[in-house]
Length: 244
Image 1 (tube, helix red, strand yellow):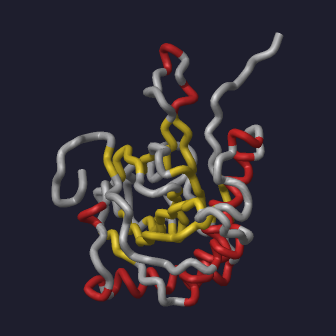
Image 2: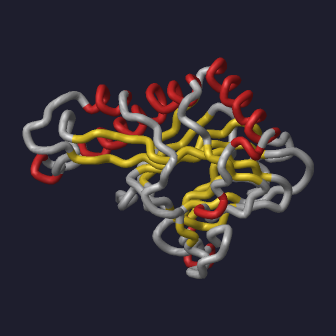
């Protein structure tokens, strides 16, 4: 007998080098200490967090993060998924026929009781980079964990146990996933702050006759601060000042 696990969802997981993580921590500490210097991103986001601040693209560490880690991860995701399709089912998502562009990047500061409801993002890809995690956030409970939600509600009695996958935040680790993938962040108890960087990336087919490796195109795209559409909470359809 054989059991088939059908309809998998692909999530990319990576790790940042220590020096880059330290630079991002310094940038984040400066942004949070001087909130007036960075635009407030909370109005267009679903999160109910202490602070959510846009990150400007000018810093070398931000450019390195995008060019060497985030955009290549999106490119690898496309390659991983498309390699499992027959050639006629790959559309424009073959090497040299698309480009990747970062369109939104922001810093999340979560404190005790803060949370991010189940939501999706605009664009093509989204993701999160964990920077700082309070020591009480561990794997023995759901506190402070990132949850990826399946297409149906989690329900133990009917064995729908695979509809929620929790990820323990670890500084330096990051995840990239399709923007349509529902996800949430549970609140945590106790002292400390949980810092993370979130982002949106757009994959755009190139015009006919345009050629070039997607890696080269992806690493040269500018970082821009506007989002293609707001991040939408699935918990409520109401439009409120903080997006939830």
